[in-house]
Image (cartoon, rainbow over all chains, first blue to last red; front, side):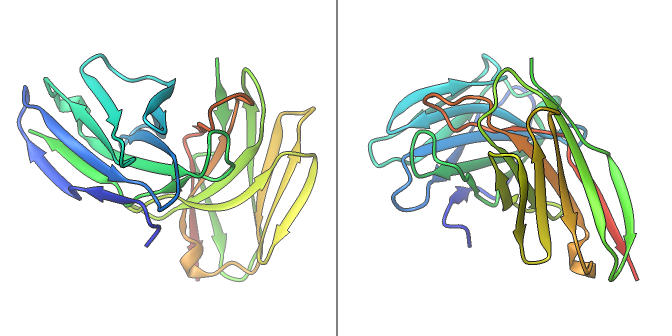
Length: 113
Length: 112
């Protein structure tokens, strides 16, 4: 158990729908990162939050949004889902803004039918 | 842009040594990381290099040459459980973000 908790583990939904993925970072970690991993691609950085504020943005689609709450948990919202959004979504956390090691959660597997 | 290259697949024999190479071209450099990922599972941290040279940690070692934009991960005394994907990642920013940019990963198959 890495200490990073992601829910749900698996999610099956239809095109056009909206889903929310949730992440609780390790105790004491202030940064949360979201990554997408598709079958044919490596881990793609989506977005980072630090203590409630957005710190860095990657290749995140406009249909996707995220936020980090005062209790430091984070949610990734995916809307108007397409077949190509099917992927593993990982959350990672680290102890500070530039801390060295990202610790990953077990991931949420999204299947869009 | 950011570009991180590693071989797609490698095969090695149990008990042997294998070297997984990684080359990178990124907008900045503030450290190189290696992660191990078993299929369908979370990536787990293996090693970190920010200065040139070799870092050794048990059966695993990682080397970095910043001038060449090159790193390798060396796995010794291979075990069957080492069959996994090995991800090379660079932290390009030294400012206020710890985000990592990952390569596609190298799938290592260890055979008896």
